Image 1 (cartoon, rainbow, N blue to C red):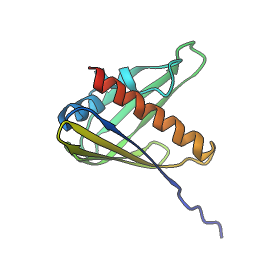
Image 2: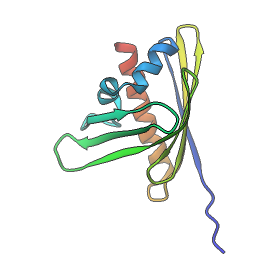
Image 3: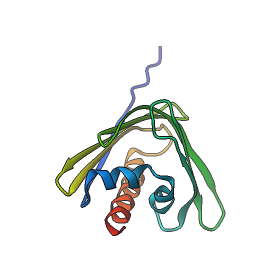
Image 4: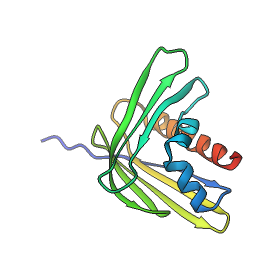
Length: 141
């Protein structure tokens, strides 16, 4: 009998902005298209987000040179405004994002189930890079 233990990876950052701004930048498509890539040679040409429990989302991530693109999509399983977002990615993996306000700063902690193809450190690095882009974009706008 085969058992598959799920590995969870956590990335986090502290954004120098109040939780209301952090929440809006995280969830509104016009912002998502500006920060949701791991490197400068990628971009997000499309984002759609129905941020509510049972709502769906889709973010198209694409190489700027046109060589590759994919949709990152799923369904929200729990949304508590300014506190937590939980969702299931289309491949079944689960993600939880916690927003912890502290005055004019907000800690964002994202925990996701690893996929079985890429090394754990590569996955952690990619998700952390996206989170770092989110922080930079939010603080600059």
